[in-house]
Length: 272
Length: 272
Image (cartoon, rainbow over all chains, first blue to last red; front, side, top):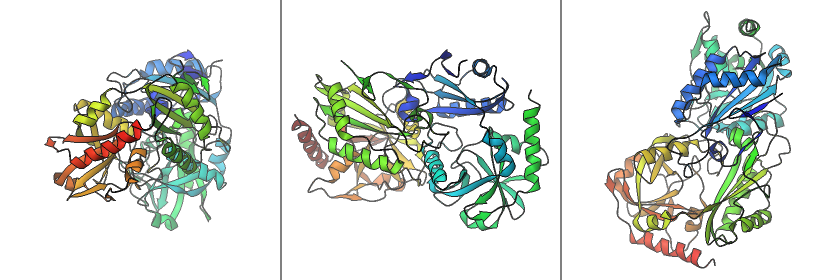
């Protein structure tokens, strides 16, 4: 069985001059599959095409990607597929080629067994010592420049935590390392705006589009953390996970979070 | 003759799961060689080792890198060598392996013929439409997250310019796409601080360490651009290049810039 495809060919190596490697000049999507179906496929493809336009990378063909995903997920109950679209090779240093020929790299990974436990029991989180740069052109995009997340994930592990909460340099909450966040503050469910830093997550977009969900986009600054009534992280693979501890503070699992999880589970159960 | 070495082996491909490709999880140096000697070698190695410590990447061995550089530059009059040090493969998504095994990738490139002309005749520059994010943990480091530079270089080409001047989101000058900058404003030579964004360049470090050079570190904001008396860009490969046009404004080449260029040329001429 094939777990890696590079431009449609079973392979596990890429040219050393790929711009994805040289400059982080790429986009990626990490997608949950049930069998060979991805319940959030349309959202992922929409973001990939939108982000490619913002980065001036020729958009990939969703039908071709769907076909390649089927090839690598066939025969597996559940999978995680990472699709990476790089700007390919060529250009003159930072300057990209006038007509880039993107390279697509697909990996299948086994389904992470710990996610179900985390959805049920919740996560221990730290406030990351790493602050995010903010205000540039890349905010919101799921691009390949992820060193800040690498450093924050490394700090979480050293602290024995499952995740880390990231602030920008101005002390405003942005997101978790690999998830968006929704916080309950003053009895409102709030998610931070992502215009200056962070990734517009597919899981959050799905949640925001549900009916009967009063989710506000508003800034939350570090000074409000002691008024947190609940905190939840969401991403399109790990789903909805409550945070039960932030540094030394315990947080309750609000019943509303359990309701969201039921909606989420239905999405995945009905996918088959 | 070998132009690419991956972990010391002649090769031009890398594993598709290299973290440099997945997350831009790497450092690099681009180094000018005269024959098999790099006049600024010590500065490059110092930065590489310092930056590796900041990113928690095990430091590479400069003696080993020197040996590999000799192998790929042998027989060439002049070369540019890019050394890339990735965090290697492994880890759990963003979370790096506890003990990373870095991968080193060395490329030799022919010497760019246009640099001498640009040093003499100067550059046409635009104010980049792309703003840099600022304030994070990565400021100053020559890391592999370079999408902002890719977009700015692309904008410069579309405008028919040689380079682009980058501001942060607050409207402060930071650097050029591939160079640091020194500006003459109110009869002072000023270079922007790099604590919040930008790369600490080896060329600038070399220039700053010369005697009899009154180079101040100070902020320059976009509002001061109409008081620019001269502008120069510097990097360790392209050397010192005057800017003769910024958008529609012509700039003179200050005689002091020619003096710096003579110092630079001496450094490279004496390297043989």
